[in-house]
Length: 436
Image (cartoon, rainbow, N blue to C red; front, side, top):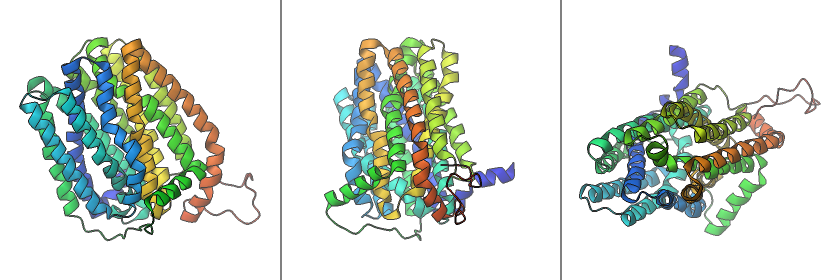
């Protein structure tokens, strides 16, 4: 048991990553509190499903338009300093939300504007944070474990944050969630300032921004592995993940609860995602993750279909962990494979496209989900979303043979797979079973 735990958290042996893990864990609890508080505040002020989608759209759309360009600059800038700046700006944004909410003067337009500001910050923060992982973890073999621990961190906070937010909103109002979120950013800023960076950052040769952007895009498109993984993730984010935007409607109107029910639903989703992240942390290798992405995508889509039919709170609380497990496993496994196979000097740009696929397309899904829910109802919207995600998982599974062809030589070069003996055919029974 002790040995398994030590293996699961081996990346914490790196001082810099350990500092980041502690600081970010605290900060992310505040972030999830703000997400829940914002959605509840919007629905309380307007009662509009469409506006729930619009606010989420405003907070995520900058990632779609600015993410790829931000990736170019992330490959040029010092990622450590960039993160300090983005986290400080995010703290100011949270304090602005808190001030307006606590003063009782906040309106939907101010929420939209501040959500847009946060989205602009995230467009630079996310690729910087993802690309910075390889500098925080001195041992390259532990990068996959660090990514899994990142997912554990996100989902532990998803478990705690929404539950705490539900209690605070019911007792004191949304403003105190925003205030605590602002304070929580101090933890990650301090952790970043305490780091001693020893792993050099490989930077791309400066050129024209559009040329570097085109180079990154060509690199992504010409690799069937990177392309297929990002398309599948984008499909799940566009069609599946926006179900979270509709959670206030399910909690209030479908399941006849309140802010506590909303907090419990989101926390249950976080439980499943946390279990999935821990399972990834216990993996000894990236082998098999390509196939695992297809399985988890199918689980995510199927869980949404079942959730759409539920009218009982206890049943919905059972289904939410399955949806959380499926989506977060797909996202984290995609991240791990990408971080393993990309060239270091293009890492920022690839992770920017990853952010675009993960968060950048989500606002379009949020807008679509809000509009559809206003016309056909939240349950039917989630039903259609789940069915399409399920179909997408079958499409991705058909790409696996081509993905293996591209990924296998990279794994051999990195020492993840042993090199085949001369003269051994690719389809020989002596070959190692196909893994992704």
